[in-house]
Length: 113
Image (spheres, helix red, strand yellow):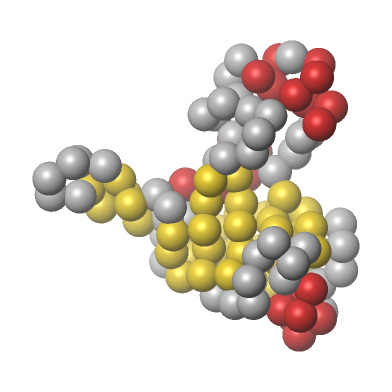
């Protein structure tokens, strides 16, 4: 599957400030793996169940959120939570011109935990 990483509305970068604030933490208290319901059924994953995500660079686990926002074959995770440090799964190779790491997408294996 393809892992795409990004932000959620309520947190900023690694959440070092926003995770200390009550409002944002109530809205988004943890990192979730957003997965399409069709993929979840195929993999035997249910809403709220922990899943294991593995890339060439490592493994982590987080709770599943079933949603049509993720296309089939794609999962999404935000990078605001050190408990599920998703950027450790992505490729740290740098763009030769901008010197920006390739943290946005990578191939992963997704399994029910």
